[in-house]
Length: 182
Image (cartoon, rainbow, N blue to C red; front, side, top):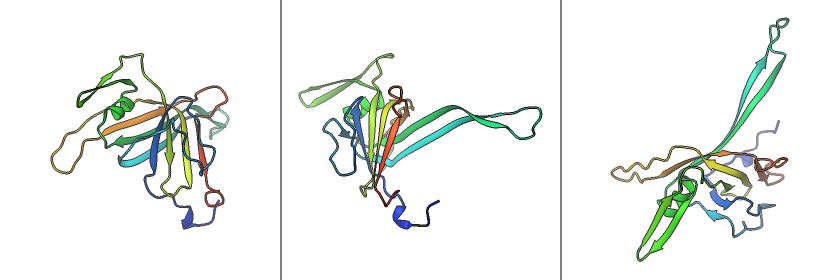
């Protein structure tokens, strides 16, 4: 258990990135992200990473306590609400689609069921002490565009479910600065 160290607190929303499946991953905290990664832009409340286990107790008649806790499944998610209402961000939220440009307009058309595009997500902390790479995600949350009066801007909510991209490849990796975040 680490001693109390306020230098290890993680503060701020950081920066989210998006890449096609198989985009080159950062190997450290110094080198710039590959050009295959684009920025998501402004978010309403930053981002939230969720790691959730569904477990079950293995019980036997001879013991009052479970003899084992089994993992039934694991659910990994990344959630954020994009504040920039653009065709590119609609394409992210709706798992793909077609963007065409014309004279003074941009048109987005969503793909049909079965044509969903899975993507990679990246995160970099504002202070440069951590990077996360989520290797395969599918946006599974509800997309709602609320239009309200005053300063409440519309946003595009996202909740990406993460998957293992291939056998023996973890769904995500976290790169943390040492010794600060060791």
